[in-house]
Image (cartoon, rainbow, N blue to C red):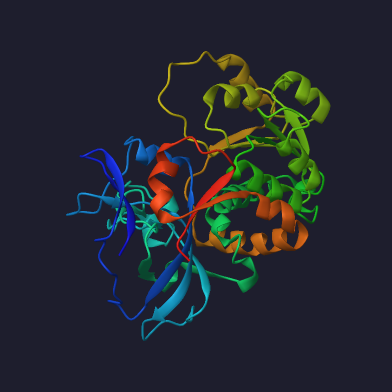
Length: 367
C-alpha cells in the first residue's frame, strides 16, 4: 500500500508503496479504508525529526493520528461497527505494565509509565495510508452526514477532555453545579485561533459560556468574522491582556491553545477568582522566560484558582466529540466546514508537512 512515511535515522519523508497490507488477525479487528487524515503541529514536528518513533523492527513511521475511515470488513466477534460505517479511531494504546492503574482501567490517556504507544507518533504506524486494521474498541461511529468534517473529531477531543475535567472541578461550586448547562453565563477566554482553539471555542459556546478568542490576527480579519459568526467575541493581541481582562470582567476559564509559554503565563495573570486555567499546548524548547512567580502563586491561593494540563483523550472524550461535532454541524454548518481549508492528495503530503502551507486545518484525502 501507499503510506506517508518518515525515516528518523535517514531524516527523510516520502510516500512509499511498500507499506504492508493489513489483515484481520483477531475476531474484534476491523479493516478500514482511510478517507481523511488531518495534519497538525505534531505531524510537522515529527517531519522536522523533533520526535516520532517507528514501531519495533521498522525503520520508518507511517504518519497521521487525526483520522476518518470507512469500515470495509469486520472480524467475527465485532458488534459495535459494521461495513459502511464512518469511524474515527483513537490514537493511544495502553502500556503493558500491570501496575499502571490508568491503562488497566482503559484510561491510557492518563498512563503512569509513559510506555504507551500512539498511532502515527510513538511505536505504532499511523493512519496516513490506504487501509488500516484496529480493534473495534478504539473506534467511534459517526453519522453519515459528518463525512466532510469527521476528521475534526480528534482535534476536538482535546477540548472535550479539558471540559470534562473543568466541569468536574467546577462542581465544587454549588452555584455552578446547579446552573444547568456547563457554562450558563460563565466567561471563557480562548488563547489561539488554530483548529484546537476554534473547535474549543465552539465547544464552549455550545455549553453556554460567554466566549472570547484572543489571537494574533487583526480585528476585522477572516478569523475575527468567523468567531463573531458563531457567537463569540474576537480580540487581537494588539490589545493588552490587562485591557482585555478589563473588558471581559472576571475570567472563569482560560483555555490555552497556543503552545506559547510567554503569552500563556501572562494570561494566567488575568485569570479570575475561582477560575480554571487549562494548558493544551506543548511549547518547544526555547530560552527561559521571566515570570512574576510571587504574584501568580498569591493569586492561585487567594483566588481559589486551579491550573492543569491535558494531553491525548480517552473514549469518553471521543464520544463527546462525536456528539458535539453533530451539534456543531447542525448549528454552524458553514463555519464548521470552513475550518478545513485545504485537501491534498497523498503525493503532496511531504511538501505539506515540511512547507509553510497556510490555512486552518489541512487534510490528506485518500477517499
